[in-house]
Amino acid sequence: MQYCVDAVVYLVDAYDKERFAESKKELDALLSDESLSDVPFLILGNKIDIPYAASEDELRFHLGLSNFTTGKGQVNLSESNVRPLEVFMCSIVRKMGYGDGFKWVSQYIK
Ligand SMILES: Nc1nc2c(ncn2[C@@H]2O[C@H](COP(=O)(O)OP(=O)(O)OP(=O)(O)O)[C@@H](O)[C@H]2O)c(=O)[nH]1
Image (tube, rainbow, N blue to C red; front, side, top):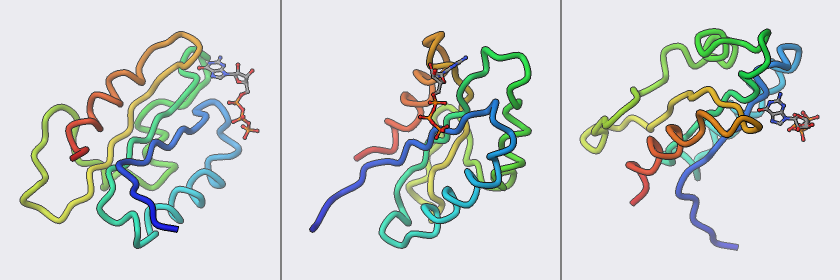
């Protein structure tokens, strides 16, 4: 079957720190999937309404993304070989945070 992926939105529970290793493993598998090699990745860290949820830096660290995020806002990557990837923290129940993430990723969807 042929299909076309415009973007990957990867939702991580930022409160479930015990499962960060599992989240990293799944994410790494997607990131190394050749058919997704130029597909933008939006990583959402959910449940930041819970006080003990991981911070953005912590999540980035545990997912091994500290050196791989490409910058928020308008960043033109068309001249580079770099795949757009960013982390946005959110709370689905509070309806906050993910809007910025989807806005960010939309600039890379042709
Ligand atoms: N506090 C809080 N709870 C949330 C949020 N988003 C989802 N939940 C709650 O989390 C509970 C479990 O949902 P998820 O964590 O999405 O569970 P899941 O990913 O389907 O299951 P697992 O793969 O086992 O983690 C539900 O009761 C949701 O209402 C959020 O932003 N904040």
